[in-house]
Amino acid sequence: MISYQQILLNKILSRHEIEQRANVWRMFNQKIIFTNGCFDILHQGHVEYLSKAKDFGNKLIIGLNTDASVKRQNKSPERPINNEQSRAFILAALGIVDAVVLFDENTPYDLIKAVQPDVLVKGADYKAEEIVGYDIVKARGGEVVTIELTQGFSTTALINKIIAGK
Image (cartoon, rainbow, N blue to C red; front, side, top):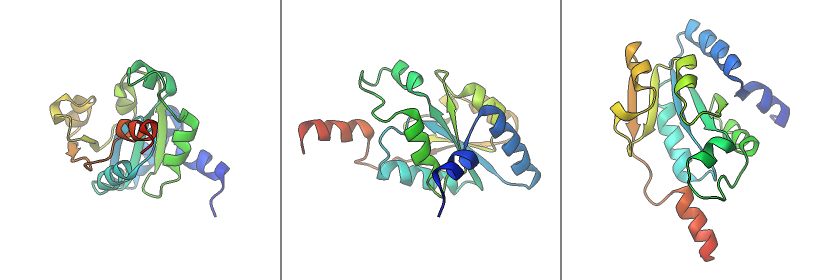
């Protein structure tokens, strides 16, 4: 059984640690996938999205918005519902996730620059050319991929359903 401490030490990494880890993975010809988001209340849509993302390579890194970064996105004053440590821990506990790195900037551009992923993944609600980090990944010969999101699942819809008592 994996302990809380093992998850924190092995998967929730600093920017410096993920740079080092990515370099090691590259030495072993591991294809690195990067995606990012808030992942506030983890639901089936998130898990399906992350599973599909993992299919594009070997190592899946999630850039996770800090609480302050989420608040600046103006989703709603109550967001995030779960704090960044909780969100990072839950994501890190998923077997398909290899690393979680918090970022406090408005976008993960600097994190993507540090990681230099082979594949950059976002939901199909984005156009590939408009995805933050597109230029970085394409410049090194990587892929930028969009994934269809699972219909009927969104954190906002889930929160609204809870508020409505349904």
